[in-house]
Image (cartoon, rainbow, N blue to C red):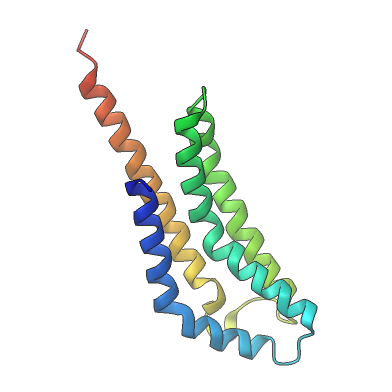
Length: 141
């Protein structure tokens, strides 16, 4: 594991511990009369929205080290992370009879929102450190 993976894992664990109870309460509220399929869709959406963006950022970071075109994973990181977050949130909404999460002030997607922001900031900081390190290695012309 590199430093990026360690920080991403610590962020995921920390956010899960901070907001796990609120998400559990919200899922009880929204899924009181839900079928098994709706509960499964809710759980899948929760995992995709919460852990998808930061997992994909870690995947892109490792992928960029192994490919001949390291810019491609970096270009895909933000749009795909955003798609994962929004797709997971839509899965959550599809599992309920509600049109939004106003009853719980967005509790089901709060952990995903924070991890999405952490993933983007962490990824940007890591890219900036690479650019700075590369500029220091090359002699000025």
